[in-house]
Image 1 (cartoon, helix red, strand yellow):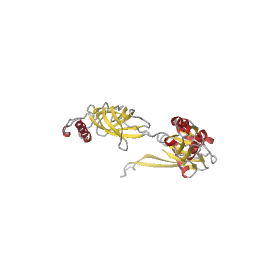
Image 2 (cartoon, rainbow, N blue to C red):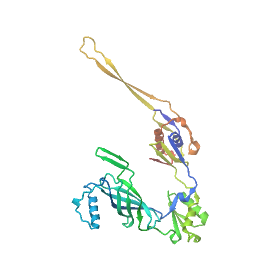
Image 3 (cartoon, rainbow, N blue to C red):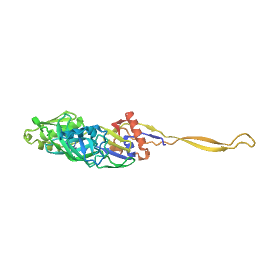
Image 4 (cartoon, rainbow, N blue to C red):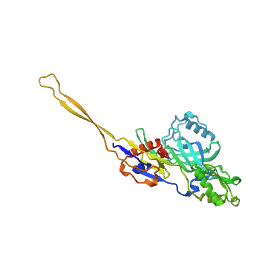
Length: 369
């Protein structure tokens, strides 16, 4: 291993990585960095039964399936003893879905079905009518239909082949919305924008962009929200007003941040990262141990015995260091592509970044994923 003594900037390490990306803020639409508050998804969940399986359903030990089947048949006037039920073509499942904003009664949404028992596969089964409830316990959709898993399982015991996950699947457009979950847009002549990444500077720039186009109608309530008073001439057409706001250009601001992926050797950083002058020394001492064997022959007419002798030789060597100098407050745009001759490995660069952050030489947030 080679000893590296260098005064580097952050970009020195970045240029040595397998893959490096430099991210800078660019002018973008408000639509891409903020959304109208209230436009949110809602999670739904329900418990149901999948029938029509070719012997790949739950076993007799799955009591929730047996009890559910008995209760279902009882609702249709069929009485059966749970102990007499032996049906491996039924599986107990949990059904989940996401209810988008502004959907109406009769709209369809996708659902995901997952086995909760010991079924081998639910491929080809049919989900029976399953109410889907929100966190408040109210039913907002009803799911039913054929399950598609995109996987399979064949054979039994040790002679079994499986691809993907046949115990989980989906039903495209498998649920019908039964209840509208919709807030009136622009109620009381006001609406709010919610920023994807809360930031004081970005919120201020969005406010200034809206006020430049429509007068003094917006103000930033906090780093993550901008409140807007809808102009009178747009009160009857709030959708057009929101659409026009979404197209306004703005330059978002971000904190100085460096993201390092140690597995792939990738670093992503912003162009506003600054570093101070610093000196870094890492490793460089090479220790090599050689083991050899030699024979030892006893003297003639002696009582000694021949044996094999193990010899150990230890060598230590320290190689010549490499040095590169870059001035303090260097930015990414100033030194991009420099110092390729240092020859540090991706692991060396990650260690250097961590050491520079610990020493306070990097003026940025360092995140390792």
